[in-house]
Image (cartoon, rainbow, N blue to C red):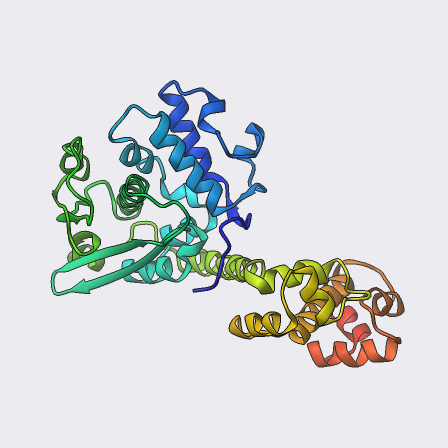
Length: 343
């Protein structure tokens, strides 16, 4: 698990878009459905739009505030088909083995399910998803229960997309109290629902995991998995204290601030900055070196800038120092690297 601040805009906007669509389908005005969410209407459908965990939570609060349907969370969750999740969904859909798909979902779920800790267990003839809502500011009972019901509905919808429309649950366990308007739970989930349980668990027969996926494709799955690797790496690189440091350094690679100055810019003491970076398994020097390496490779690959110009842009005192660093990063000289790309 890596640290992600609640206001860091790193998530796709698709969850907010679905919630807004479902509210508007009830007749809720767009302005109300987007109350407290500071993005334009056109950005709701843009793949480039990034939102924070707090903005996703705000869309859930709006649903609780404006929806008149006691089953809104379930009904909205049933709109989150596997295609909603982009390349992550494609990877799940193309898995050649359902247990492989489950393992993949667990490895990469932070691409699709912020606010949650997700686990999976298989015992004898039963399999179960377990979710825990991560603590965050102003998490009340109603919001907690909304998130759990929404997520369980999403899981059920995705399972039916991947395993077929006949997929059925055996039991749902909720740590919430039985709601006064909770009669829809058993009907919607199609199984017994138990309340005041130790964990939130979604159970189904483990025999489903032995079936052969109808849409499995090893090539597609591998390709989608590689892209998910890149997305998860980018997510990690843009979060936490290390992410904040990278943002500052990227704007100043030619003359980066020293660690004391950088700490002051981030509102931290130098000692605290070093400790926080160590907790994230990196350091100030490693971040500068990594960013220079990534930027140098991109310049060599995508531009015709000379080695001397690239060395200057990256803050090297002379081209020889840059050539030495580039050979350390890539095991080849800059000009040899560029020639190999043209071969």
